[in-house]
Amino acid sequence: MVQDFGIRSSYLSRRLRLTTLIRLRWLAVAGQSIAVLFVALYLKFPFPVSICFALIACSAWLNLLMSFRYPINHRLEPRAAVTVLAFDILQVAGLLYMTGGLQNPFAVLMIVPVIISATSLPAYSTIALGVLVTICATVLAIIYLPLPWYEGETMQLPFVLIAGVWCSVVSALAFTAVYAYRVAEEARLLADALTATELILQREQHLSALDGLAAAAAHELGTPLATIALVAKEMERALAKDDRFAEDIELLRSQADRCREILKRLTSLSSTSEEHMSRLKISSLIEEVIEPNRDFGINIEVKKLRGEGVEPVIRRNPGIIYGLGNLVENAIDFARATVDVSWGWSDKTVEIIISDDGEGFAAEILDRIGEPYTTGRDREINEHGGGLGLGLFIAKTLLERSGATITFRNRNDPGQGAEVVVIWPRNQLVADQ
Image (tube, rainbow, N blue to C red; front, side, top):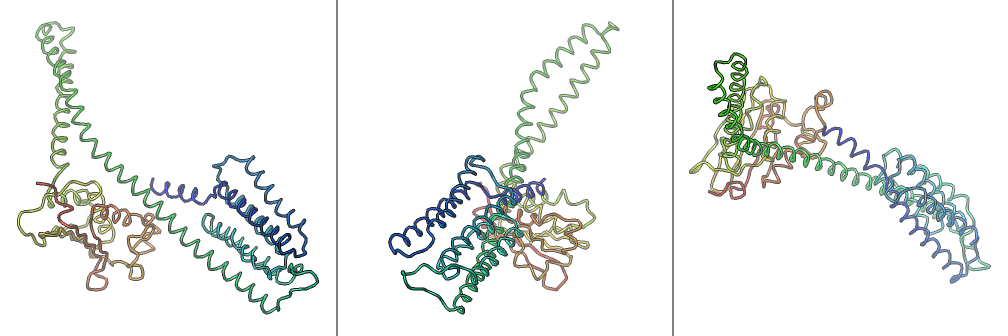
């Protein structure tokens, strides 16, 4: 489910909002118009003003067409967005051709559509637009109309300087596009992973709430069920000798007794759950975390490291239980034979250490463990049997929300297993006594 959600979310995040393009293009139309009017009316440089305004009008016409054709919240498919951004590149290139090519100081504006693509479209779309800008810049370095200048004078920059401008445009294009793409991609991955974490935590909270619902149901059904049982007993006493009703009455009583037993079990489970819902000891927390993972052929050893005074009683937190359970499950997946869960406390901290005897975390990505879509173990194992690399991220996020500090490391001897250390400030974790 989380994987499907991640795919859908990633797909939607790569569709550019139409309103974003329309607003940016109106800004471009206004800026281009002001620049043309300033050069033509104030500086009074001769250049083909009418053709320049015709190109600007094309952008305005496209904006109006898209505004009337699509709703304001429409998201463009990647192919349509690339087409629109390619038009913007060609429109700017046309204006530059009329006004000096790469000698024009506004030549760098050709890279703007590529940056927009880098933040919201797939990589191949950005590459295609980058190639288009490079081609346009190359053509404009060779073929262009004279740069607008004072009447009777001609401004012609040396070719070496034009080549330098070409290099600056291409290098700025590459650097800003890669930088914008990486930042946007990391933001998308983090947003998707955080949303998946919220869904899982919400599910855990809903499961915890079921115990309260069971208690309420048992309480509400207890009275009418007792009435049914009493009526059934009276009917049995009155009609026990009537063969027509004896069997049905016996069935009614047996089913009523069965319902009472079910409600009794629900009440017992709920009361036990409610007793531990608000508070439980560290040892009880450890047992609850590791109990679902005991039947996977891996020996789980629980060790007490230290303890000063009475064992802490902590506030029950579904996020902590899920996060620690995820760490234990991950250790079991990669352990050879044994997983150690060590725990202890002092007057200032509560500490839990989960370690295994597997190969340990990959050294080259040890510093990135806990980031979304990063797996710290064997890549081949993850590709053939694993998930998206969200498990450790979700566990880390949930535990850090409870105030914990988490450290991922390998054991002292290379190849002797991985170790995860979780430490809470005691005053944040321990329940009020």
